[in-house]
Image 1 (cartoon, rainbow, N blue to C red):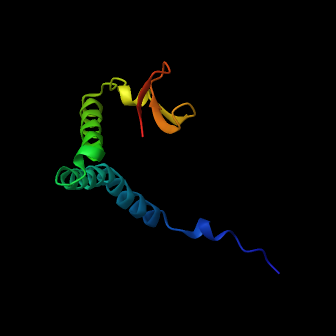
Image 2 (image 1 turned 90 degrees about the horizontal axis):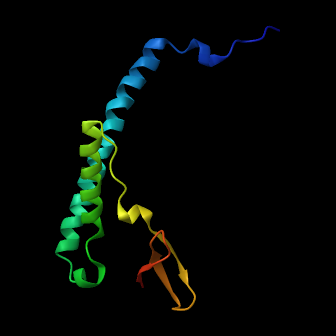
Length: 110
């Protein structure tokens, strides 16, 4: 009884190249589809009856993504956003979940 070689060795390189050539543009479009999805959510949030309570977080995310994309296109490193320097945890004294700045100052609770 002879041992069969691995089947992955028999995959033609043209097939591997075709798959790679297809995946690369799709991955590049992922950023645009994410931005488009967030822009649609932003428009819905702007028209929402709960805008005073909830705000427009999708609009902020879209602005941040577009800002980061502009820096990336120019080959620069984007500045650190204040929101990136925040963390989220339970505040026992208030009995609520709160956002904290990096230095420990409470930003908001809900």
